[in-house]
Image: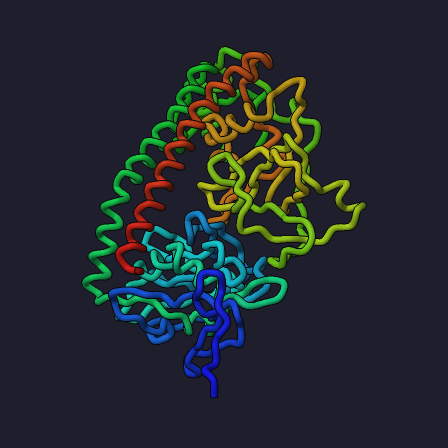
Length: 456
């Protein structure tokens, strides 16, 4: 019998690839078409070193209790997203312990995985996420860094299943191979990574100082000098024209905003510069990318919008007329933890988006104010001191309603002055963002070095 000649590609290598039957988990060509992971360290099956953690708690059984909810995105991994009363959570949420990892099974292929550390305050996460822990042989942070490497991310993409929406189940994850050094070597590789990222940490601190400059500049340019908010006892006096809430905590501290009223520019209530004020949608949204993306409280960060970890909702054409966002809309987070309530950001996209009920949409009068100027004011100490005075806190949840935020007072210069202040503040903001981008680049370089040390 003549020898069978296998077909070859242009490079001369065989077009056929043989896989041992014992290694076949799924009948999926893309999974087995790529080269297997190689390393100078032992290659092991991940499932032997991790275990799923699906400890669900019926949060709705505690309707008046506040629960801290975690989120996951591809920028920071795990983050403290928001707090919510049990009565508003209609399904069981998963417990998330320190050192556990969680990922979005539909977005892990773009890096949506995170590790809960001692820096996170919240400890529950949506049941939509896959949660797992590592056994003693595998350091959680080592695995987290491995997920961030290009080579392992490629393996993740090749291992997802689904004809429309790609999915990575925990069972498939367990079948993946990883390089596994000893625990001591894992720790040493992590130490080298963090040594490399020291410059990134320094850049983050410099970015923070830049952002503090924004607060200082806006206060100086407007001539505002605020006093610290302190609890007072006994009798206090306040100007009647600025009393908008009959509550002791507010009235005792209303003198703290005296610096605003003494600004070198005329002071106006927010309602006087608005064209409209509207709450967002209360209808339940889905993680399935069908319909219009909905912005929620976790999409506002540091006075900017981040279009990640989105949910979606189907809307009729009639509904769209009233709830689609437009360029120049200002979104105000009316409910969140005490330190996060009152966050604002300007929507500045052409695509269709809507917004959830915990956000309020403000349309400002462009003949009176620059919306970016108002955004800076809300996020400055001038806005923050009023948010802290006004917001009501019940079991960790703080609230500011539409009526209250319209009664905020801001110094309002003429439009030309506003635009100049915005230009100066935006220049500083750009420097801060540039420092953050450099820090991110250094972390990417550190991950590349980590990958090179672990994977051949």
